[in-house]
Each structure stands twice: as C-alpha cells, then as structure tokens.
Amino acid sequence: MTPWLKELDSPTEGFIPAFAARITEPDGYQGALREALLHLVPRVDWQGYLPQVPHGLLGLAAVVELAPSLVEPSMLRLCATQLQAFAREGRAPEARSLATIGLGSGHWPNIDVALREHRPAMAWGELLALEHPRSEDFHHLLCVAAPDMANVGHKAVAVGAMERLWTSLGKSVEVGRVLLAWAGWFVATEPEDRFWHVRMARRTSGVPVPTGVSNQGAAWQQSLAHEICELGLVGMLDALAARMKAGATAGDLLAGLVLAASEKMLDARRDMEGKTAWNLAYLATLGRDLAGLGQPEVWGQAAAMVNFFPSDAPEDRYRWQKRAVDPAVLSTALLEAILDGDPDVAMDLAASSADSTKVMEACAEAASRNDPGFNRSSHVLAAAGAQQLLSFLPAWVASTMLIALAKSLANSQGSDDLGRVADRELGRIQPT
Image 1 (spheres, rainbow, N blue to C red):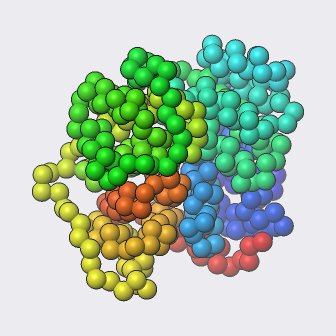
Image 2: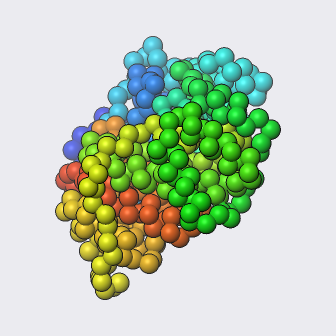
C-alpha cells in the first residue's frame, strides 16, 4: 500500500504528513478523500456504534459544505484533522464487517424489501451492486428515512450528507456506490422511531405544507418559536398543526424552528453545547432536502426534537448587546473571542455585524481550529448546518442563529494541537 493508505489503515503520528504529501498529487485533496472513503467506509464498525453513529464520516461532508466560508489553508487543515478522526474510528470484526458482504442483484425491489424489513446487510449488498448510482437513488433513501427519528434524526441527515459529499467529489461511480450502500445500510438499521411522525400524522392528515419563503412577520415567527420551546409536547404539536392548517409555508415554519433551536442553544449548559447544536444539522436537512416532500409530519418531528432538548439556563442569562466596532476588524475580534472562550463578547460581536457572511466565516474558522477528537465533530456539523440555513432564512433570524452559534462555539472550544500540526505540515507543501 501507499504511505497514505497505510496511514488510513492504521493511523500514526505520520498521518498528517502523509495527507500533506498525498494532496500534492494531481487530484489533490479530493483524491485523498475518495481513497479514504473507499478504504474506510467498509471497515468501520458501524454496527458496534448503533443506535449512535460516529461523526467522522458526517464531518467529512460538513468539511466540503464549509469550504465556501474558509480560506484554502483552513479548509485543508479541517480536512486533515477530520480525516484523522474518521480513520481512528473502531474497525469491525470480520463477523460484522461490511467488506465481507457479497454483492446483490442491484434491483430496487430487493432494496425496498431490505429497507422495509430492516435488513441492513442486504441493503448494503444490493445498493453496492447498482451499475450507476444517481442522485435520485439517494432521494429514494431519503423518503424512506424521513419518518424515522431514531437517534434524533441522524438517518435523514446522513443520507443527504452522503449525496452532497458524493457530488462534491465529482460523482465518481465507485465512491457513489459505497456512500449509497452505506446510507442504505444505515437507513435499514434498527431501532426505528416513528413516535413523533405518527402523532403529527393524526393531526395533519391531508394538509400539505407548501414550499416557499416566509410570508409571516417577526411576531408570528417569535410566537411559533415560543410555542416550540415552552409548551408540552401535546400542546406544541396541536399549535403547530393549527398553523399548518392556516396555510403556513415551509419558509414560515423553518424560520420559527431555527429561532427555537437558537433559543435552546442560548439556554444550553456547557455540557449540552454540542448536543443542542445538532438541531442546526437536522434543520439544514429539513430546509434543503425534506421540505420539498410537502409532508407536515417532518415539520412536527423537527419541532418535537427541538422541544425535546432542555432549557437549563438561569433566568439571568446574559443578553447580548451591540457594540461600536470597526467592521474591518470585527471578524478578527469575533474569532479571537470564540477561541478565548468568551461567549458574552462573542455574542455581542456577532450581533454587531450587519454582514452575516463575515460572521459565518469567523465561526467556520473557529470550528476548523477545534480538534474533532475521537467520534466527535459537533463544531463542524453545527457550523455547516448554519451555513446551509443562511440562504433559507429572513436576515434577522439568520443573525439570531449566528449569535447562538458563536456562543456555542465559544463555550466549547477544545484543543487545537492537531490543527497546529496540520498547519505546519501543510505549510511545507503546495497542494494542487
């Protein structure tokens, strides 16, 4: 094996130097990512993590989604550290390794049986046998995953992330098969959780949610966010169903949900920061991938999930205030506040900028400097979710979301030792 494949197989201190050398080749970091996916996805012990899923693979999808907000050295740093986190995830024993499953026929009737009957090994083999994976195949899996909120909606998020990761890497047939097969394996796994879906369906049968931007004002959106955060589950679902029946659009609902998720992040204790920020990853999938289904149930599921997270902040929670700061230095000051672990200053600075793009860039840079660690990529997943949501939200809702993100990042910054190693090694090469 090449030095790069050897490091993927068994990571050592030479992992990042091997990555730095690999990206000098003509296909650059995308080639390194393709090789990593083909080598690691069949070998990780996915079954051993269930009902959880390690975030190394989802984190790689988030890296490519954050690329527009990062300068190239930062994107490569994040790619290197996230790849190492993925490579360090546990390997499956032969008895449950996906690499040992034989190919199926590649026929969709067989795939549908595997998904319906929760036969993940069959789903893997059948999907891996598809001759030409398509975006429509991922969409088919997404429709199956949409009602299943096991592990707070990870299945739908994973399917959407794999399709975007495949697209960003040039839609290689080989990579597409592996990512599609893994997505199908994950969707077919148990447990399945349709608790919230069933309860919302009882309230909204035959009430489609029209696509479109928000037509409601700030008072309507704030009222919806308050209901999601403060009512009990039954009362909240009743109130949400009434809004759908009154003609609320997908844009209306998404704005209220993001406000509610932001409120939960602002309330979160330090030990809940990464967990609560997951809401942004799911809501990004809802706005981008699930809204087009027109199903009221997916909105009820999202609202129930946001409602599920606790609100434990003291009543005297810090309230941000705008500061008079030179726009030329605001982004740098915001980054420094996050890296210094000063959430109050970070919130003030995020609130003081009228340019959401600059705030997003500072948050993305902060996330790229936080070592993902084993089985954890909450910073990059939250930042990527926020970036995707920006294009769907009214400006004031987007601003509130970014203030909450800045606070969350500042309260949970960890070591950047691995990132410093990556900067040093990558600084020695000229990537293609």
